[in-house]
Length: 491
Image 1 (cartoon, rainbow, N blue to C red):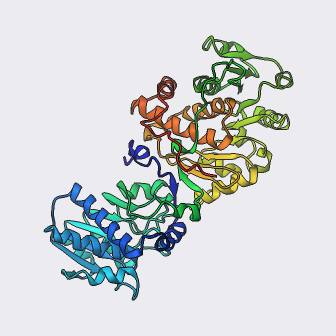
Image 2 (image 1 turned 90 degrees about the vertical axis):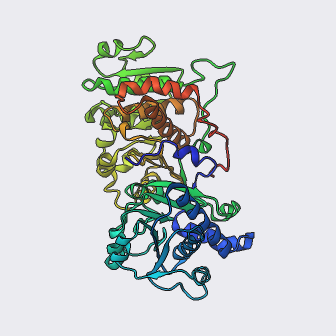
Image 3 (image 1 turned 180 degrees about the horizontal axis):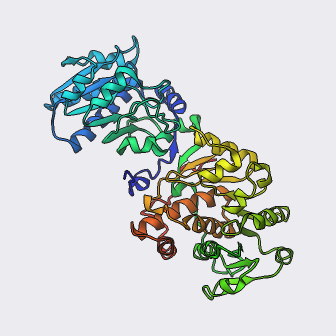
């Protein structure tokens, strides 16, 4: 398990994610802002050396250096470790390019050189992977893959070679790093699977690149942190209707799904929550006394304009969802569509236009939009643009895209959140936040973040019923260790 429960806390104030092209632009802008390339390379190498020294004792170390800036960072690491008494050698895949910052770093290395071979890697106790950075443009194979595969213990500079910094995909082969040290801001590939698993422990180091470059690069992808959104606050003059009314469509068979969604809406702070029971109202009335149940016809319920937010899909049944969802959308309601409301419109994504938030898992996404493919961020963005809805692709690396192109990648969810009913809780949680006036994307992002933190609070033996009281505990302390201080809000 590679889940890091403290990662979101360590990223506070640094939510921006830069893909390799954006990071390249940031590097190119840095000299104009007083941070020349050689200085940044020196700081990057020092950050890696310090991270290594903090975790490992001196041992036989081999630096695998590529011809670009990633290799240049590696030469700096080698020199600094050698100065502290480490037995270090450098194996260069190719010489640094003439005139590049890496060439200057390479000239300062006067220690042993080794062959770039699997045998050299196998003899080392520690291999530092400084071959390729996040902007890798080809598969890692041949001697590079064989050499990395021979390493017993790997520390990666920026990303493990072979991990696509934009998508997290593995291009050819990528080593399993024990530690990855990256700089300034994370890349999407650090948070997206399978790349996240290859990174091991992740260190984000400040190397002196000015934050002002973000004003010119203007990234549109973010780690899902509380600085992206603000939770609703209670008003002294508030009342139950000012806190919003959520209505959950309840099916006749899988009644637990609607009940979980409804209870999550209540915990999230909605003033009233009703289950609209198409059948089996008696079953729903056996739930908590504060949960309202109505068997009135849908048109009757829609006549009440205060019923603005609806959850449609969990446990509803495909035919009932096929009938209800278009009517909700025609009535202009803010709908969280999940489960059966998605499967009912397989291959017909335009039928979902007008929903507020769609919350598919990977199978439902494929049924509606087609397979997400390698670049899931791009696929979710495209789905949001097509439907005009926020699309939240559920998973261990949940991706939340707005129709305007903003994307957040969630890193708060522990592995034990993968349990039946957790998605129903998420849809109800998001609806409860929408009912209190949060914008669609912000509500989806906050819901995913809180959902993960509640699971973390519940612990590894969690079953879905444990999520609800844990959610109440999390919401009772919504500062998350100071993470909710607004920083540079995405536009």
